[in-house]
Image (cartoon, rainbow, N blue to C red):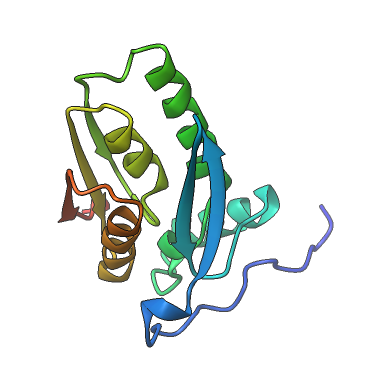
Length: 148
């Protein structure tokens, strides 16, 4: 097997301010969603590298504040469910919410209750801010670490 160079970016030190984040704009069901993130919109290869780093317990990587392709894909799926009426009245638990995009979309499009969790306070602060800036106030935020 060839020895490939690592594509994991160096860990980002503590962020001085959430105001320094970048915004990603997503158009779903006639609405624009603006999601702040750490300036990293990960490719699938980068996502795989971050997951390897997580598996290796390099916990100083703030992977939750990057915008993951899976979050965008899940937001699309939730919007499709909402369009079909399948999200109305449902309870949603988002584990490892990071930037919060899927939970924000679920809460705005009819879920009865949304709880977003993350082990990182920085990520939870970003979730709260993204929810507030998208006009979504009916989300509960909890710090949770399922790694035990």
